[in-house]
Image (tube, rainbow, N blue to C red; front, side):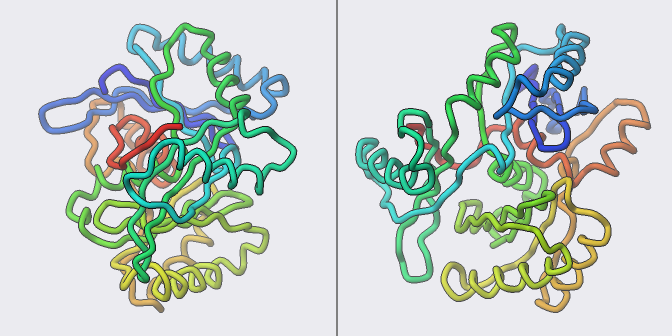
Length: 305
């Protein structure tokens, strides 16, 4: 874990964190973000952001051994489908290829790689799988940015890394059933952990921000109907989580009688960095969960196709 730089290519900026493992847990030794965004689907249009990122990393080169990458929802196709534990990779690949053909009929299935995560069965007992399907072009763009200088050890999606950050920072809730909403400008990632295992995922279009409370309540009702018996708490994060939207989430949580809050990526983290960095972490704690999760070994079972 030490010397692994976590790089989160979000839609607004690229975020970075670097930790050292101490006896008492993780110590933050570096945190920063670019001013310009990097579009991994159009890297030729992101030269300024890429150059800025490379300059920032070169300054910390002596601290970095390798890199973990986090991708935003906009760069990944995530879907859940029926699937039993113990299925062979060939069986899983056939199911995932069907999902790809339905979602991207214009592409070949060979243009993608996938990570599969077993999920908690639904309330009806149906076993489910979560597929994170990534275009090879996006992954190749990541490799070209670092140009072989630093090896890429892992690539994961933002919502799953936010789960990992939560499980590290809220150990007292590892046996709870928790709802997460990752709020961006145009999309909301909605997911649930039950006893530390994924139980649900959905991606919502987010064009009418004044209806956030309605989206939240609809997802909550669907979850209790089909997926879980209860929700113990709800946490919100993401660059789109403005003060106004957080108040909407908090008010809806109060109505649903749910404990709730901003997801604090640094709750169980120490640092000896200057006070201005501590202040930055306090302001940005709800933006960094995907990035911080990229520094921590995943708690999820994972099948790579």
